[in-house]
Each structure stands twice: as C-alpha cells, then as structure tokens.
Image (cartoon, rainbow, N blue to C red; front, top):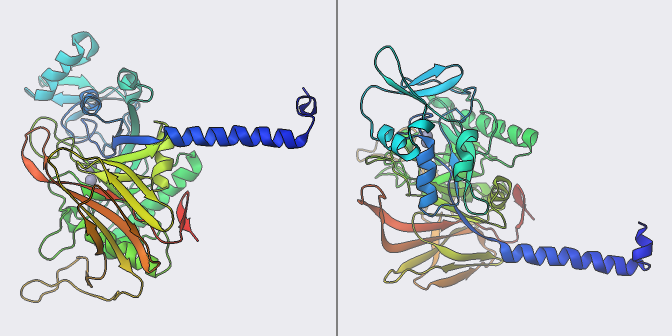
Length: 448
Ligand SMILES: [Zn+2]
Ligand SMILES: [Zn+2]
C-alpha cells in the first residue's frame, strides 16, 4: 500500500502519527505503578537454609511482585556455574543438597511438592541427597503475568568482604580477588565487569554494593574511589551488617550523604542510589529472615527490563515498611505522598548538602584519641543535614538552587517486625532517591 493513497496530505499523516504517539505515551503514564521486590536472596544454592521454590512461594504470598535470586557466585542453573559447597554434591553436572539428619526445610519441601516431584537419594554415608532444581525448571509454577516475576542474579562475592549484587544475568560475573588494602580497586573492577556485561548483553543491569559496613570493610572514601558505582545498599536486613554504624563508624546513610556531597561538589553527577534488601539466609529460625527491606519500583510493566530501566532512572524508593503513594520531582520541587496506616505517625525529612558547605574531614578516633583503622572519616554536620521536616502525610521541598542534592527519608512510629519470629527489629522507614537541581534524568546519569 502506498502511504500517499491513505494519507493524501502529509500533514494529515503527521497529525495521525503524533496522535498515535501521544495516546501511547498517555496510556503508558496511566499504567505506571509500584512493584515490590527483594533484590538480595540466598537459598540452598549457596548458604541460604531453604530450597528456592518455598522461598519464591514466601515472597509471592507476602505481597511481593518480584524476587531476585542472588546466591554467592552461582546462578540457579544446570550445568552448575559456581562453587560446590560443603553441603553440596555434584552429580552429573547437577547440584544436590546433602542432609545428614532432619532439617526443617526437607520435610516442608516434600510435603509441599509431593514425593513424586522431589528427586531424593541416599549416599554411601547415609546422607539424604535432594536435587536442587534450576530456576528454569520451577519458574512457571510461580510466575504470573503482571503479578509475580522471578529474576536470576548473583552476589559477586569477592575476598575481603567486597560483595556486589547484580540482577538479571545469564552468566556469572567473576570475582577479582585482592588484599585488604585493595578493596576500592576490587569494587571498581567488579563494577567495570558488570558494566561490560551490560554493554555486551543488552541487559540493563548495574552493580549494587552490598552491606558496606559488613566486617567494616567499605568506607565512604572507598566508595568515592569508584566513580561509576551507582547503587548501594542503604539498608540490608542481615543482622550483622551494621547499617546504623556504631559509636565511631558512620552509618550507611551517613556514607550515602558523604558520597553524594563529595561527588557533586567535585563535578561527578553520578547520583548514588540507595537500595533496601533482605539479604535473606534464614527461613526457619532467627537471623537474616525474609520481609525486612525491599524496593518499590515504578514502571508500566513487570519485566526485568522495565524494572531495571526504572531503577536506572532513579524511579524507585526503598522501604522497611513505609509505603508511598507518589514521589514527584520536576527539576525544582520534590514531593512525597505517604500511604497512611491508621494510628501511625510519620516524620518526613528532606536531607541534603548546600554548595559551599565545609567539605573537610578528619580521621575517626576512639576514646583515647587513637585513629580507627579503615573507617569513614568525620565530616561537618552540614553534610547531609535536615533542610526541612514535617509530620504531614503529603509534603514537598522547593530547591533554591543551593542544594547539591536532596533526598527524602520518612520514618514511621510503627515498629519493624521480624516476619518469622515477631521480634521488634527497628522502626519502619522509607528512603527516596536523591535529586539534584537542574539535572535532567536520562538513562545512566544526570546531565545538565
Ligand atoms: Zn554479602
Ligand atoms: Zn548476601
């Protein structure tokens, strides 16, 4: 068909095409919604204490829309791509979990899926071996279009407690190795490897620095050495990762403000985004249990590509319980609307650093004046200060142009509970991603 036959006037054709494009754009806008996901999850494939299927089931039943499996240096696939651990057996390129005695996961698994669906055998020492099913074998049992999605990722688990999580992979991203003094270079190289994978695969995956305070491994200054690091865990649900820091060491939030301030003051417009995750390991007892920290990602559809593109744009927030109806930024004003819960009060803080603030720092010292090794330095209180605060459910902050960045933290009066044991583990909170004045969002970075 000749276009000129249907559209004798080119102007008409142009108007028709414009209408089609605008209609599509409007529909897209209307359909964008928040999807809840956990992006850091362990199973029997490494050091988690359950099979991946009940783990997927737990998240699906508890209001999540997506789950990323991030076992250590391994993908849930056959032939096996990663380390075979002490509790594992490798039989015909397949991974089997060995049980020397009773294990709560084993009985539950057989009850849940039935004898006929579980591959069990005994080895010569009397251990019960159960075959671990790769993701491709069980994903259809759980995935539901527009409801629930499983994503293959891994935790790139390097030496010296340098761990970076990446979602949506079809190959393991190799570790680097190194000495304690080489952590920044190790991080930098892993970020480069993930960037290289992204370019090569076309999958918009980015490295997320996991639990910086685990073993007090990573400081704000080390993060600053990695100029292309764009994501880190501001909250990790594992009980031994010191999100809050301690008397002498900076919290992850403090590190976030330091990195944002120093980067933007120095002309690096890569805004660091903060992710909340479970880092789930324990599904039966106490410890790193599920349901502690998650992301809410705003996109039109529930696909790995759409979710990762939205996170790339910074269109997500992190939460340990607080839900937001909306987060808006038009280049000048940032606004948030909290989804209220009856009887709960909220404090919303607009946090940022003004240009011209004191950027100097000195080493952190203990009570006797001795410098604490490998610790984030001490900076002025003007770094990451509260610019405004309110108890309103809907609030906003208009940037004056003096701010290097602004981010919003919402703290709730409601307790954050361990979903398995019921114990109180903190107060519920949410963190929006930082915005900067005059910077326009484009994939990858903010530019003038
Ligand atoms: Zn880790
Ligand atoms: Zn982990």
